[in-house]
Image (cartoon, rainbow, N blue to C red; front, top):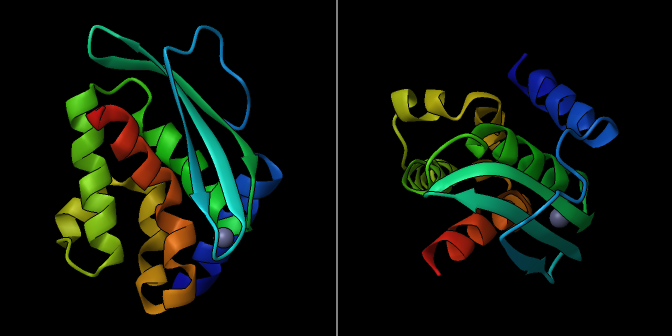
Length: 139
Ligand code: ZN
């Protein structure tokens, strides 16, 4: 069950990405690269008064990297920078197996990627968007 839910979500976000597009008036952009797989995304955000009012990404990569970035944007658009950083921290800890169930719950759809912690080869794909988000917001 868990596994098919995971596959369904990954497939759905690849076939019908919600945020894979340019955005109007982005205020900050950063490229994230995962050379071990060939994932390459450019994350774009529009920040207003400490809040992420819009976001998108362009680029290419494997299904996991693209689905993870798409779900991440779905979660953080409308949040403050602080909240987005907190969620990124939870996601990165979830992938290492260090987040509580209550925290994982806060990640909504992105919680489907928790099983990646058992697939070391895919970890860098799953965290690419989230690492890029952390970097962009800490600048
Ligand atoms: Zn990848």
